Image (cartoon, rainbow, N blue to C red; front, top):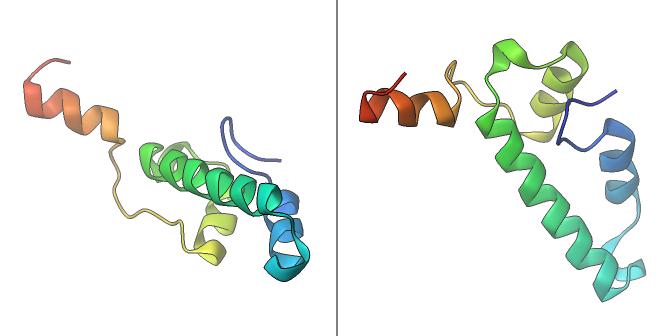
Amino acid sequence: MSDFGRQSLGDKAGAAMKPDSQKSYLEQAGDAIKGKTDSAASTAQPESQKSYTQQAGDMLSGNKNDNQESLMDKAKNTFGSK
């Protein structure tokens, strides 16, 4: 199970298993967009709010963020609104 807005581990594995040479340009573009979106969602969500499965998937895929605050919290703190 994946967190809201995130790719499931099965989807990530499926995309990684098929070589780019066997994918259409549309599939390659879709994988790239999904990867960027998932990475952004990973960064935006604090580790403390991720499921154990998503934390493990992020660690394996290199999406693990070490910040404890979300980007939204950092913006709020910067501008002094909370």
